[in-house]
Length: 126
Image (cartoon, rainbow, N blue to C red; front, side, top):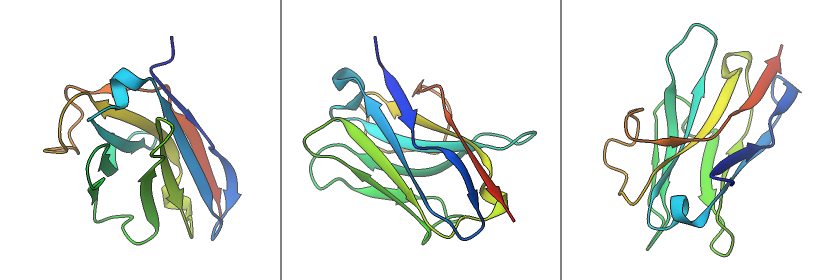
């Protein structure tokens, strides 16, 4: 049973772009805060961006990649996207989709009380 399934990762050169997708089962998507995290080797898992899947689809961003990354959702399918532009080697990490099921995006950047996907690897070479 699919809960959260990420796709779209890969290897790119610096300056390149990728679009990650997170296909979610409806129960983990509806009226929930959907979040993208990333984790580089030896580092803690870091919240990148979040979107609330109802109403005006409010979005939230970590200051670090803001301006280069854009989170969005498909309003027909239960999919959340992360558009990543001008990728740099320090963006290399495993990228995870998470759901704060049935919750608004308060404290979205924390790793507690989330349902997680398996992750998709992004590797950026210089």
